[in-house]
Amino acid sequence: MQTATLFDLPTIQAPPLVPAAAAPAKPKRRKRIVHASVPTAPWTTVPDELIRDTDWVVVSSSGGKDSQAMLSHVVRRARALGMLHKVVVVHADLGRAEWGGTRELAEEQARLSGVRRFEVVRAAGADLLERVKLRYQKLRAKAQREAVERGEDPAAVKVPPAWMSSAARWCTSDAKRGPIWTLYTRLAAELAHLGRPVRILACIGQRAAESSNRAKLAPVEIDRAASNGRRHVTTWRPIHGWSDADVWREIARSGLPYAAAYDWGNRRLSCVFCVLGCTSDLVNGARRMPELAAAYADMEVTVGADFKKGLSMREIIRRAAELEAEHGPAARPPAGTALSGYVGKSEAALYRGRLALLRKQYTLAN
Image 1 (cartoon, rainbow, N blue to C red):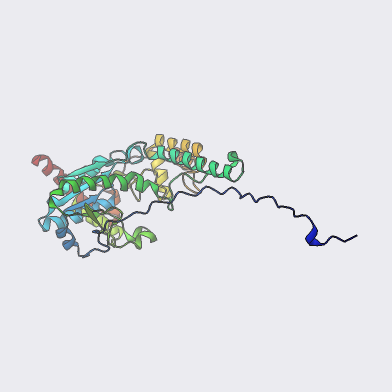
Image 2: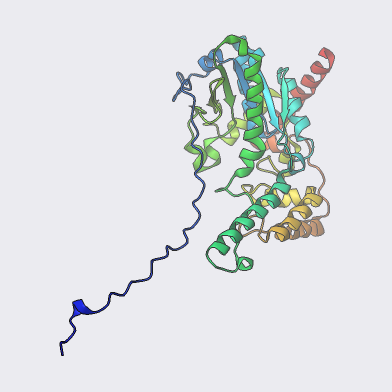
């Protein structure tokens, strides 16, 4: 009897390998192609040369002190060059998210400074607070979908914060930058007969003293994202190196009206409740606009996250209520209160005289 060898044993076929289900490929982000005509760097950084070389000087105005000081500074230079007709002031209307009367204030600042063209742009669809809810719904749907793909319980997912933050300033792109770009499109179309890309000088009131990130910004640079074959946009930050005192001195010199929120004690003005605002500004907003504060608190419940990391709107409202209970409703301070802290009471009195004269002259002329 012969002993079977290894080579005499029957061959056993291994079952075919079944590849594991591959995770769905993430859609590739479309690469933005910048038109070949768009320069990579500005040909000059000299302010007067920038104004002479451009077709439009577009001043973005929030109605706040920085954009106001920038406006009067830019207008003075443009007027001296005989090019005031190029200046357009644009206000991105934030609806209920901004202090009441802000759009009207921005327009008055433009008119009294001598600018005849004032434009208002606004994002289509939902307002800023409603966009928080829409963003939350998208983030939750994405988190649940990814949980299912991993074989996990979608009901137990943790949804990323939907609120704006210093790291996620989607509010700026949605409510300001995008709508302002639509104005650039219209301005370029008005000068299409030039047969070349229209040159737009976009003036922004960002200052290095505001934050470390803004300190890194260049005073002049090409905005390649906003540029295309029909328009070339150069960003100019005219007051980038200015201090708070410089800003208030320019306001005093110009005589243009400034937002009453500063006299109430606010350090900055944009949205009533800005995630970048200091606590005192937020509490001040809750005292002046309690209905809006309540709407933000309700949205915190909807999206399951505090308005600001480490500081909920509920806490802001509580602090505001404490101040109301202790001091009663605050009386509006005299106009010029904030200004006098930087230029003195006598100069603030002169400023109020300049403002009254500007308003009278404008009324008589129009």
